[in-house]
Image (cartoon, rainbow, N blue to C red; front, side, top):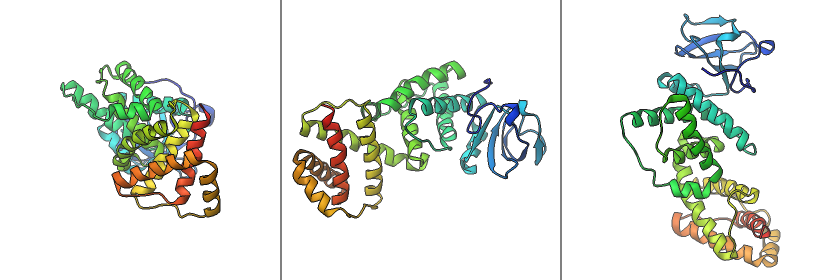
Length: 298
């Protein structure tokens, strides 16, 4: 079990001066339960034996609480019933680290539990000597280098906490969960994350080829470009394209920035050929703006 942590409102130790009485209403397992605070807000609490007493009951001893999670879907939290304490703690630690290392991004409150659910199965497969190769490893490392780096760190964290050495390919899986958690959709949108990763790799190649540049994939401009592409493709794949409202600005930008315009059009052509969807002029304008930022870094 882990000691005090800062930021207890999301996950961590509860300082005594901030402790509030919790009404525990539903057991998930002996150490995880659903509760409400004094304002009526629903929480998921983790701590030794918090799910053991007869429900409902009032928890008055803050020393029993190790972590508190807010805004977690009850359906997602119930996955903790089959997750070991060590895996849940290390998943929380990984997400805490991601919040520090990727401080420019926001994560779904469900991420700790969806990632823990994956890690539990990964640990069990490893114990049974079952290894599943991930064909997306190269794509993910290429498109999401920060998340992939955290995935590699996560493997060491699991080793230290659980005592299991996960295969190197799990770095890709952890990275994909972080990316999915950034989008706030978690497991339900994992197919879109995977699909987008492969598309973003190709789009990056198009930009580098058209502009004759080598993009720093850790740069702020590229991170924002990838974030824009993820949401763009999410809309396109779901047929939720943005209508054009800046016709005059689009025409002016196309004349003033011909290389960015040609590059954006080539990206649009790729999306149409590969996925049967295409961008509006408004979306091409936004693409041009991001392409321009990438170009000015060289």
